Amino acid sequence: MTLYAQDQSKNPPPRHAFERLIRRFARASYLIAVLVLYAVASTALGIAAAPALWTAAKLFAFAEGLHPVLHWALKGFAVAGGWFIFGLCLLVVIPVYNFLLPTRVKPFKGGYYTIHAVPWFLHNGLFYLVRFTFLPFVTLTPFGIWFLKAMGMKVGRHAFINTEFISDPSLISVGKDAALGGSVRIFAHYGGGGNLVIAPVKIGDRATLGLACCVMGDVEIGDDAVILPESVVLPGSRVGPGETWGGVPARKITREDMERIKQEIRGAGLDEPGDLARIRDL
Image 1 (cartoon, rainbow, N blue to C red):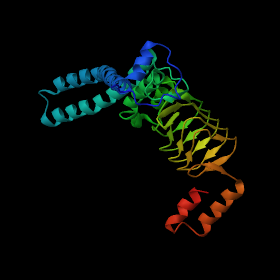
Image 2: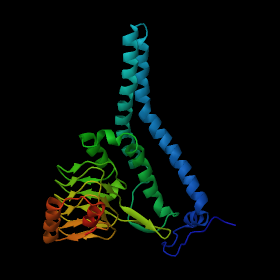
Image 3: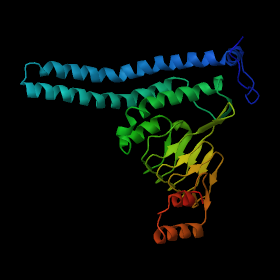
Image 4: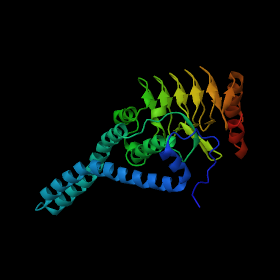
């Protein structure tokens, strides 16, 4: 009995014997890939932590013999400062790993358990080491923008990115003067029916993505377009230049609809529990 249980009908044909082996023992291959990623992540985290540990050790040694107040204050500073040294080093170490390892993500449609998905898996695994640790501390700073660019994300001049909820950065492009609001979620992939689709996301110049909206893979948002807060832009959507989209799922909202919504908000208010949901789903 093998662990080959995935529907392979939508997969491209295997290119060599190694890929056939991966597909035949899909679950076991996945487990091995996870363990390898853990090992790679451990080395990256260790390298980033080394300067922080060295600095903390020096400050700890210097604190010996000082007045107790200064002694513990300096040790506290060493721990807190070490965290930021670690994070800033991680912003450099992870892009280096991403450059050296096979992380060149390409558009793909097929099974999760295939060699085509390995670069996507590894690229996101490395990116998440920063996203779930230090990236929230540098969002809206030059350090955050630099890191996103170093991971392959195309970011235009003066783009405003107020979110760390990003996946697949190498397949995302953000135009100049675009604005991504807080907690916006962008990922250049989606899945269903046992298959994975990896497809780029393009956000045009001066586009605005409202608070907590969600943009999925294979989406293009034109110049000067607006996505309303908490909207969900489904795969395959093409938002034209200057258009306003909103709702779950998001769809085009005409100027007349927007004026009517504004009038309802100003006039009747949102007193009933269903009012906000009704307006959001227009």
